[in-house]
Image (cartoon, rainbow, N blue to C red; front, side, top):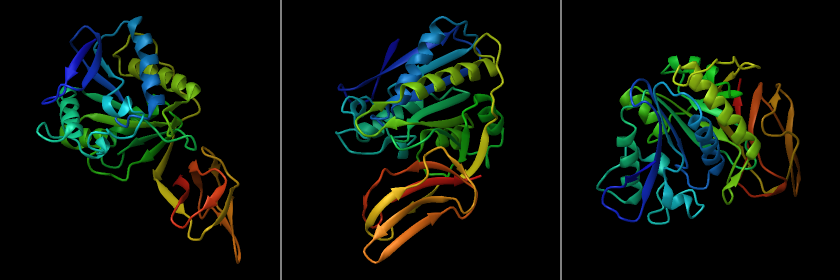
Length: 294
């Protein structure tokens, strides 16, 4: 392990763990760009245990905590500037702490061929891989090899680490969302273990780790861009579907009881539920569902 000093500040360092012989294909696994998304941190550390006893042919660099000041506060962003690091890459080594941190991470990962960035989608969310397969079709093969259950086509938000890595540097970069994180850095142990096992298998597929690759079943489902449904009225929200479910058109998603009647939400096409709010008194504009067409 070595420590990557963030330029211009003595208060924060990033721990970088490297495995392999120093030559050949280079892969980077990152976590905690959002500091409270700690299922990804745990998955990265579980992978590190496996890498320590594996024969690594190339170079695997694991950076489980890329935003340390946010991580140690169990918050999405650093308390020093409240900037979302997932919207500012490639960063700025003369900017605020978050911009400097992003710049240091960008420089550290410049020579990677593959990047997997681990995030969390909250306690009411379900696992998916985010990738730009439309503009980088070679990612589809890698997402299939990874074997996470669902791939979502990114909507293309500027400044994301994985997306800017694809656009600016031509790297094969994807993002994995895992349950947990918000609130308070909760870890979903089962999904962390699942993800770590798939990452190790993925490294065998690209022949960076020695061993036999096992083809994943059931096959990965590729979906469209994420969409959301927000409350248009104030009322009592009762869900009827859960995160991770595949639903056919006209399936009932939930209902909203309000002063003058009820609203029943139905799927307007075949969808995969990504997130579903818990029952609550919903206010206008609050998110009730996240979903993707398939």
